[in-house]
View 1 (cartoon, helix red, strand yellow):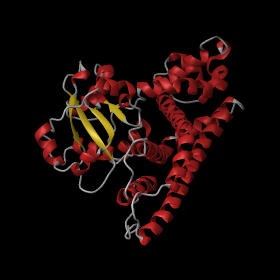
View 2 (cartoon, one colour):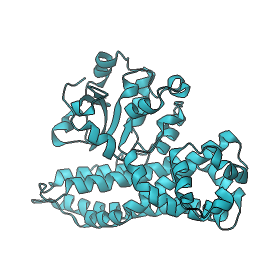
View 3 (tube, one colour):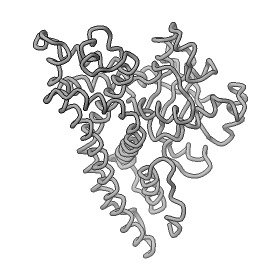
View 4 (spheres, rainbow, N blue to C red):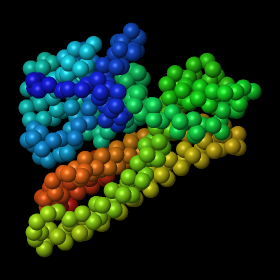
Length: 373
């Protein structure tokens, strides 16, 4: 493992978004006493299963850690003192140069160990949102306990009022005669977001005609669509602004005619793809809105029940698309913040190619698309 010290882990724990941080130390603290956590760990290696996994924007001096160019990496952070996060920690990047040696020396893991496979799957994801993460792990035969798929404290705080507004039409259906008592909407929102519905949601389970196991899965999927809808809502304005900036930015210095033609063409294609991806996400979320309206406004519980059963099949693509959009907005604001150095032609092409690769989605590539560049 590298011996560089990571500072402000305590701040990271409280401020990082769900898409950016998988806080296994917090999972261990909250669920380490449970049978599910012990019997279905995300990582077999105890140290890894108490680490912080972070989607990290690479700094200029970190680019050489990898073969090939990338702007975001998956960072494994091991706190020096789990009880005092201000002490910092040590880190390594997944698939950095010499990664197999790092895993062997740091954890005693061979290249074919299941934990290395799990890290590889996580590294391929555009974000760490729990709904995309669970579906991608499941596709690869990895099924850890549900406690590993939670929304971060930071995002929960920001989501609460949004979710309350979203579910208000359903309160009378879910809690019966006490629907209009103060706090009813907040109580239902808290139960959905916590992932632990409890006995007070029994009326809703019966209404949806779901078996207990299916019901808990359904609540997880419901929370997933509420999370994705909230993410899209918070990104909407920024997506429009960044897509316009992408279409107009030119690098500093002289540009050869061939590269200028490429940049002009690619900027517009990328802008259109960003906006098209946002529209595809909106259309997918509209499927949820229609199903929820059928339940809350028309009393058609079967429509919403069928939606919840089918919802996991939508998570992978939806999570990939929103993860790519989050990356584009976040990196663009980071790289082109006031006071940052102007971008050169080579770096700009690299950034545009990175954005386009993210929007292509899982299993696609850019082979042969940018030979001239």
